[in-house]
Image 1 (cartoon, rainbow, N blue to C red):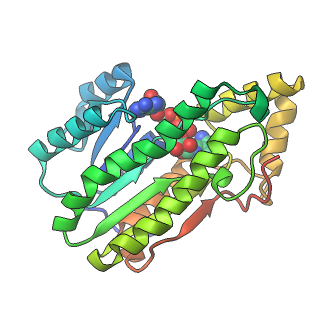
Image 2: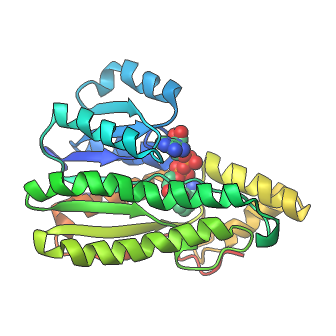
Length: 262
Ligand SMILES: NC(=O)c1ccc[n+]([C@@H]2O[C@H](COP(=O)([O-])OP(=O)(O)OC[C@H]3O[C@@H](n4cnc5c(N)ncnc54)[C@H](O)[C@@H]3O)[C@@H](O)[C@H]2O)c1
């Protein structure tokens, strides 16, 4: 497969030390980009920092994405290394609690909205002035299949991911004239640690086997397939590259054509 190189592209990504964010990071550096990532997990950040093969390719910092001061500090550290940012990937997002709405805890509800929506605001607010100086760039927000469909037992997560769709459409309109493109990716059921936890919690709540829940999740895509973290990395690479220079305001499913989430 041929793809456009990301040589000289500087990319910022939130919550990038594992899962989808780490897969995106690896795809982007393999294609020539430099990545500035943050994560709340200090152990993972230190592990990345120690790897010689990532030297001058990945710059990793500890930061709680839901703490505005820490996000400001993260950008100050980035600005010491580079004055240019080509892309921001708002990857941060937690699964939130599982259960029917009346049983959910208010603090967990609020926390899900804070981490999944307000963090995107913190990062985007810092990144826009820098990307503007660059006369163009790409902002990619991680929404979800739960941002375009209902998702029973996961109301705060669904509410947060629908909010990301609204934010994406609005920002694309606000920033279009500056040639900053804003798109959202809606991953389907990703094979990885997050889904392991989601499957476990749903099976516990419904008192059925994890195997059954897993099978149901996979069958929600008409391609009857898991989605892989790399699939999201490749879509991000495309949305950063000049191959997508007139694509903005789009909500893009990378989900094997998921048709339901229940
Ligand atoms: N995994 C899926 O099946 C799936 C499906 C659709 C959408 N998504 C979305 O994709 C994005 C990435 O998902 P994932 O499954 O890779 O996530 P994940 O749960 O595997 O977590 C990825 C990283 O987030 C970090 N993190 C958690 N809280 C943080 C905070 N407050 N500040 C900074 N870092 C923090 C963790 O330390 C971890 O390294 C999220 O927005 C998620 O909602 C995931």
